[in-house]
Length: 336
Ligand code: ADP
Ligand code: MG
Image (cartoon, rainbow, N blue to C red; front, side, top):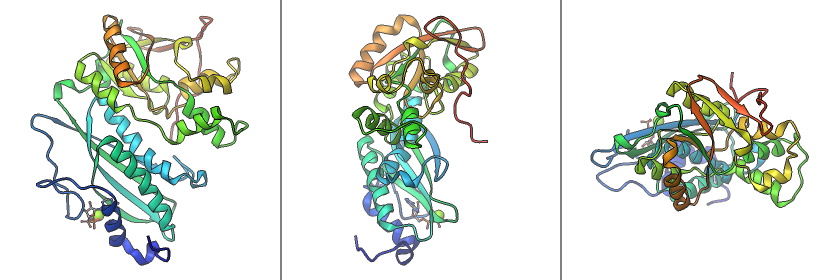
């Protein structure tokens, strides 16, 4: 990259050329960047699965975190997580950018480094996008497309009373990491702090696990946890016409989380079940499928834990280890 190049002398089309050069393109007869629209061929008999997410500076990220590479990774990861939650295989993505005039080109390149890394890790091709100026910070919109056999796709609406409620991985790390980044909690330089901050800045979408569960036909409903377990499980319950009882003591947490947060502090449970941005999967399944699910999770290399049961109460009740009911001060992030 030329050190004297700037966004303004590169121009919109120069930037698009540069973006195009960074990503492998779909093979013929498909078409990616360069014409008025992309041409894509899902495999015969497959349902196209599409999800889009917007990341706005000052809302979803602060440039002062100085982690443009990780932001590139995360802007694709959050979308891949939506495909994981449907059980779809990711194939293509679209990138739309609104960039403030004078935004340093080398920072855009670093953002693209992270994006290209994540795309390569998940085998998704950049097939197009849009580019314009912004008068209020960097805005990144990513749309991903995946595919799956229609009868394999998992929805939020398939849960039934009596089903187990499962989560993948551990919860709370990301919300704690964000708190540390924002300086709401004293930040130290130890390995546990670094781990939870990394979990916030570089979440790992559970694409392999989501696809395997869908293809094995083991799961009745699934969602990814972006707004916090209680809020997202609430969506499964609402769309499945169920209620839920959660045993919070069974909710998996990382050793790093336990080392950093006192189990007696009011934020302990809150971070775990109402913090958000975990990008783990929450899913439901009949109890007789437990062993099969544990086996799949083992193959995928991601732990999966039963944390409660669906019921017909119509509400989500979260029980603390002493049997009392946990009342979150607010469940999940709301924009308006
Ligand atoms: P139009 O004016 O017809 O919308 P553009 O000039 O915006 O077309 O885009 C030209 C081509 O470049 C299209 O194939 C579009 O998908 C692609 N493109 C534009 N911006 C981006 C971007 N940020 N990332 C990837 N592809 C892009
Ligand atoms: Mg355009």
